[in-house]
Length: 302
Image 1 (cartoon, rainbow, N blue to C red):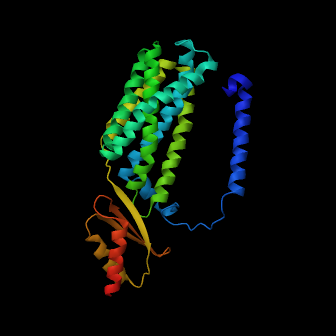
Image 2 (cartoon, one colour; image 1 turned 135 degrees about the horizontal axis):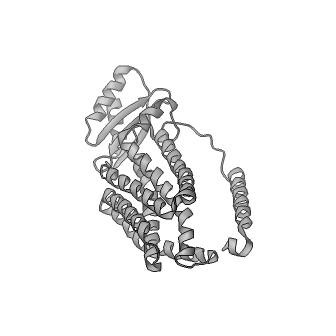
Image 3 (cartoon, helix red, strand yellow; image 1 turned 90 degrees about the vertical axis):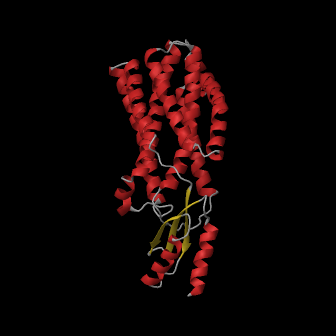
C-alpha cells in the first residue's frame, strides 16, 4: 500500500521513522533497572561448544535456520509468480498477502490449541514441514493456478507462524541446565543466518538457474528437514533457580542428592560465581514451588 501510493523510498523512510520512535521509547519510557546477568539470560562463552553440539538443540538450530531460509527465499521468488502466472499487478500484491495471512489463521489457531492441549507439538511440527515440502515440490512443476498458489501460500503462512511460535519455546525447554541464555543466543544467530543465506541463494538461483531449479533445490532441503524432524525429542521441561549459600562441598552434595532422588528432577547444577542452584525438571511431575519447599526442608534439618 505504501509503495503503490508513495513509492519505494517511502518504505525506507517509514522504517527509519519507526526505528527512531523505538529508540525514543527505549530511552524515555523503559526504566533503568540494573540487570543482573546470569546463565538463564546471558551467554556463557566457554560453554558455546557444548551447547552448539548438543544433539537435542542441533535440530532446533537447523529448524529455525531452514525455516527463515525458506521464508526469505520464497518471498524473492513469489512476487515473480504473482506477476507472470497470476497476472497480479505489483500494486495488488499486498491484497493477496493480506488475504492469505487471514486465511492461515483458520489453520494456525487450532494447531496452537491442540499442540498444547493434546501434547501433539512434535506431530504438528512434522506435518508443517511435510506441507512445506509438498508445496515447494508442486511449485517446481506447476504454478499457473490462482487457487493452488493461494492454498500453498496460506498453508505456508500457517506452518511458518506455528513453527515460529513453538521452536523458541522448545529450544528453551531443551537447553542444558543453567545454559539457556547461551542456547537462545545460538538459536537467534541461526535464525538471522537463515534470513541472510535465504535471500542470497534465492537471488543466485534467480540469476543463474531459474525458478524451477530454485524450487527443486528447496524441496530437497525440506525433505532432509522432514526426515530429521522425526527424531525430535520434546518433553514438558522447565528450569528454575534459587539463591544458594555454598557452605562447603559436602553440603552441596547432600542437597544435590536430595533433589536428584525426587520424581521429575532431571538435572541439578550449581554456579559458584552467582551463588545459584539451577534445577531442570519435568512440569508434569513436579513444580518449582515443590522443589523450593524440599530445599528448605533439607536446610532446616541440618
